[in-house]
Length: 589
Image (cartoon, rainbow, N blue to C red; front, side, top):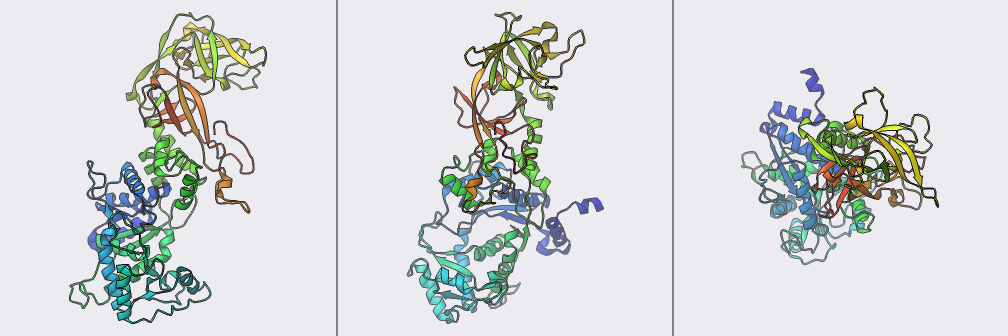
């Protein structure tokens, strides 16, 4: 029991204590509340997995709620992508249905009338006022860390005047930015969020859900707690930057509850539900940026090929690159939940997908940089089918047949004319194993007489080693290389993706520069490769290990005539040992 208790994170411990005390009636109800102003990234995946995982663990409920309070930046494209991402990660919200992607989805805009009514209530209680200061003036009068704020000259307007102005704001009588509704809290508070924060701003924008019904829209801090309250959320789990906002979250609900009672006999009626906000450290990954603003810049300026570019840290980008939801879930469990911000090494996420794909991905042989080998003692008109294992980690995956002929292609890197010591691949006079096929020995090197470039290799094979088995004389070879039959090879397009940035912290910006200066010029390499014929029938989204190359996923750009494959991850980490000051270029990166 002690071991089980010590393994629980601090959020689980808080919920456990709430359940012991009976708070919230031993219920657990969580939510994921994205703003539809961009695609979700890997940091959101951590929040989704955490919130949904807690609901599942405690037999509770999970909501998907869109914080659609800013129509100026929201688009249906973002809504659709968020729903797809959350479903893909395996999170199931209340009311989810397969036949209707938006079934059960909740919209903050559905609560606009109730939130407006509560704002009117705060005005009546003398806790809110209409302010005519501009946004710049509001910012300037909020003071500094060492100097208290200055009260707005409109702070002491009468309740009647505030009610009239707020109603006229709602009716659209004032231009954008001319007035705001502010909470009357404490301009001397050490917490800036309590220095009369803005509750509503004027914005004459058509809303996707409410149309032109509203021209005033609630600020997130005002809306957040009430959305949670209306839905009966018990544990409002936020990232750490909202820790200083928690007093405001509580103040708004407590202020509405002033004059309310549990039985509804108070002058303002029944108390509204008060959730518990809990903050955890957001996910930060090396070699990435997580700001939606910066990700949008990458997309709009054409530095990447859209939000789902496989180099982007978006969930859709990882999905297109070949990541699995299970790998991301395992990664989120592995890094755990912390109270303090830190940066997680990208290799931990890469290891998660390596581990999962090693278990589930079928193997195929693909040659990226072909060099022809002619096996001179093999019959010219003979073709054999070699039995190849689909996945050595999964016996149920079975085997496939791979054609073998006199002429094959190997990787150019797998031959060296003047090899160093401990080079165990093909070289003049050296013998290697062709995977699933035969032992072959290099007998001759054919070069272009004009350039000296190696054009092809001549070799002989040992018929006694069929299947790659050791020969009867007991001799062994240390090198095993992959290959494809020249007559049967299928051309495919391969995209070798690597880190989008070449610095662990892309925000270490040179003087006068931007984070764009840290982009990796080798983040994408295009390769025309040759594949064994078994790959030709692969479907979009299927994942494979290209033997000795890495893990790859069939891209949506594939056609019936030509396959396009994205590299998900290399077979092992190629970055962890690279010193930041050493300008190395990784092959294929």
